[in-house]
Length: 146
Image (cartoon, rainbow, N blue to C red; front, side, top):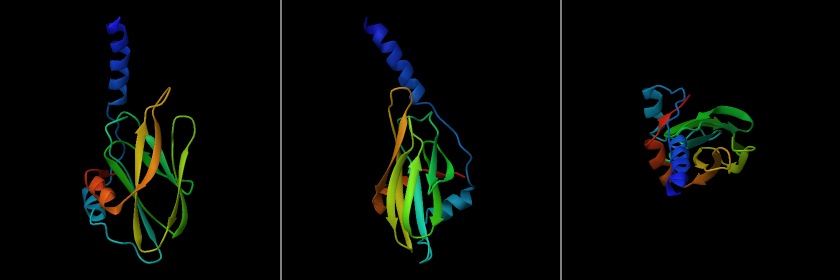
């Protein structure tokens, strides 16, 4: 009986902890963005990263204001400069997109974590704003995706 329960649970765990790959940027671009220089006063910098153990086999689309910026995988991040003001960040999830509204100022960087949550049929994803310190620490552990 216990074996019948453990086998499917192990299969699900292995499926959700596999690895996914996405196109990566150059090491030079990655190193430059990890200096975390502030953007110009008329621009906002947005770092979106994914640094979690759960759902490593999953790739999820990420959008800023309706524009797809890339497909995420574990240990990757994206950087995008946008006009200051209201931003809508979105990520593909289990049944529909999950959105995060963000009010931004020029000359500042913002850090957003994409996290994976276990779903009914497939893992879902969400976005949350994090502190500069937490964001910089996690981005340093990731690689820049295209």
